[in-house]
Amino acid sequence: MITDVQLAVFCNILGVTLFFLVFLFHYINANYSK
Image 1 (cartoon, one colour):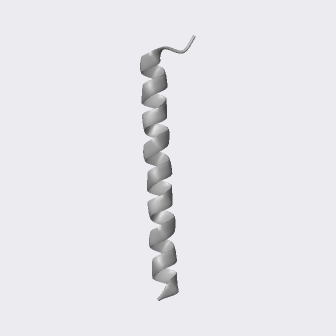
Image 2 (image 1 turned 180 degrees about the vertical axis):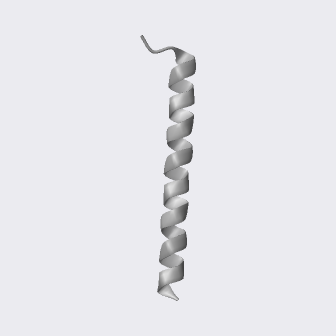
């Protein structure tokens, strides 16, 4: 059984990971475009 705390931590880590991947993707695209 998953508790609310585990779900919140999982969603938080998932959100930060997705944000970091999007940031990294845009950063690499910006560098390759120049």
